[in-house]
Length: 217
Length: 217
DNA sequence: ATCTTCACCTGTTCT
DNA sequence: AAGAACAGGTGAAGA
Image (cartoon, rainbow over all chains, first blue to last red; front, side, top):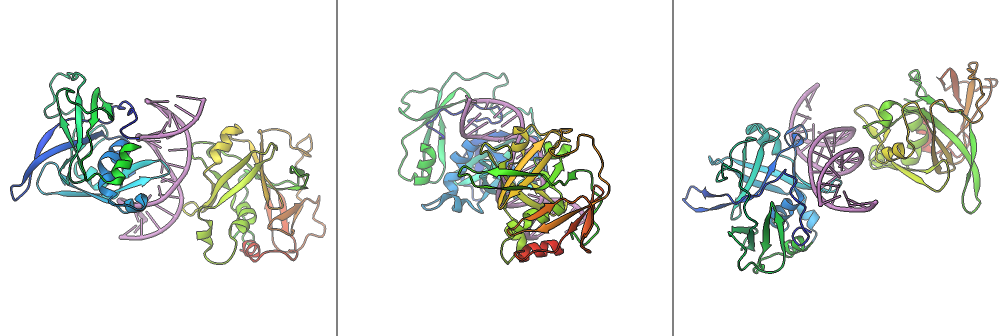
């Protein structure tokens, strides 16, 4: 349901970009920090409900594959799931969020731990929270509403429709690789996001059954 | 807590009558449809709160005995309780309401499913919702504010303070039987509602332990 | 007593 | 039109 069907046009609440930063670790290990998704937080996301609603397609694309490891009952393995994020500003601070699925509203949420992040970063409605990863390491950052986005052009130039190749790498994370046009884009599953066609490349070996299921739905 | 203690004065939201209709089933099975209670709904009952506050004494008399079956933890058995009602107008429509106790407000409520009834019947503040039963079958109906009540006198004559004898019949349901005065009213437990003293008559044999408990509290 | 967390629930909106 | 998604809610339990 995530990739084969035409995704709904973005509601404007989320943005997908190609920002690539560097994730430094003490030992000097250095990897590309790759953007997963943004969400412009709603009043509820930063209010007394103490939860962040994670847009379903992002949850299923980025978090479920990691959390649902092997076979068996997916829902039960999701129970009690915790996602750990490093603070995107560096400084070694880390954040742990309980991640769950609320079946009554059919939505994914981060609950326990989320309000601490809201408080600490003084997150307000309209601000943007960004999720990155570098390999299996997860990062979270945020920026004030209206703040300039790194690498974004000063003038909002809409890119000509292009394709972003989405491949699967060892480890649970898919690796978005920006290309400036669609030459050599594999036939088959792709979806359009903000006028960009995202193409799913042939999956390399370690694509779990669950991920396949998630991708095929 | 319901009957022995002096009940709070009625808020004006409930009325009790002795209307008896017939509940027809396809097979021709026919039973008396006996009135349990009415409630004049408040703005909150039909508003965004999506719940109907069930007057405590009615909840304890009519719904708890059915829902709290055997032994064990009563509160836990109430969790997730659903009451199913047939539409009082016939036509086979049915309504299911989640029934719960809100300890924060010490009140019994119908929640899930209630708003559908409000919508469907265009229930408005001041209207009256009526609950009936025929054996174990439950019925719900409503009438517009100011609508003539079946068997009610055309002129709104306030009855002289009288007593309504409440007896118990086989099955979980007590049987309200209107009498026009208080001759022969049993001594003991009664309460006043709208200037009418409701008297609990001696229970006949098949009164369940739970119902007895509910009545004794 | 208060705050957080959890597991539900629903109306609106968009597809 | 019907359904999915989700923003905005709830009570209950526990810390």
